[in-house]
Length: 382
Image 1 (cartoon, rainbow, N blue to C red):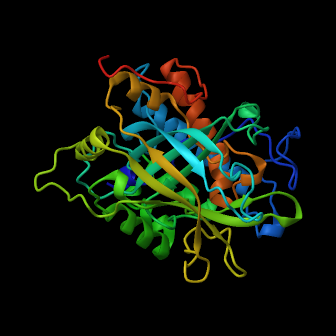
Image 2 (cartoon, one colour):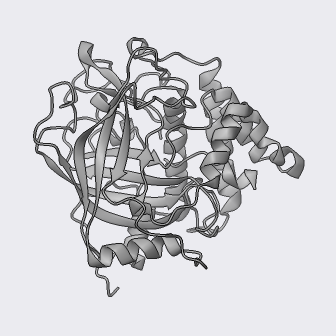
């Protein structure tokens, strides 16, 4: 059970370019150590972070290779079960204060977007009725400027990755590595002890995440859980993201839910109308940690502010072609402009592990890693 629960999330980078802190998005970025930190915004290196991160990447890659030995079958290590990949619009608020109008948040600009909703558990056959942390990957297209990853420096995309819980169960790379090490052990006893590596606080968060049952992915709130830079230069600040649905709690979990009832709920909702989310930014106030992802930034101290609207139009998305397209996509918070540079140890781990997982998955499946344009559409009859 725990071996399936604790999977390192999808997509990040081993061939890396890091932001020259305070640089502009149009400037080239020289290769930098992935452990480069932004001390002004509160980042601090963890002990042995580089070696531990490489160890985590190695363990996760080995786990995927072992689990999917047949060519063409490799899935994400976490969030492998998709409820649907849908096209959308991401419309920035027309009037934003200068402090929030940074990076992609240009007042009034509308971006084409793809959203992939998923279960977090590493078992893609697990029924939706089981408790789990759910996720959404958001990919914006038509975003100019050089990006943070060397492999994607000229890509015109920007990603946001969020889950249905405001905090994450691990922060220290040593705990994270121990969790993965135990969870991927061939010994059933050692694998069963994996949660102990998180400590009591991490175990409590993980338990809350995995016990959550939902009625519809379109009616849930999602959080980034970890922080990001907002802006560049001396005026940059640390922020977290959240998306909040316009409709909450209308649907109910079926009395006898089918294994894929969350996909069916999305399908029914988008067959007859649109779905909307508010995209929110929470600006850190003094004393809030960027390294401890287990501690929530309380909204009564640092309120969320709406900066954009996500509009998911009515559509038919449940087709083999569109599902295959969604599975070929990679999402990582490091598909980003330098104005939105990920912060904290968990994000630094993601930079390496997500990219390693994405590269391996595509290689095992014989597919090309390619960023979308936003113009892709799929014939529902195919």
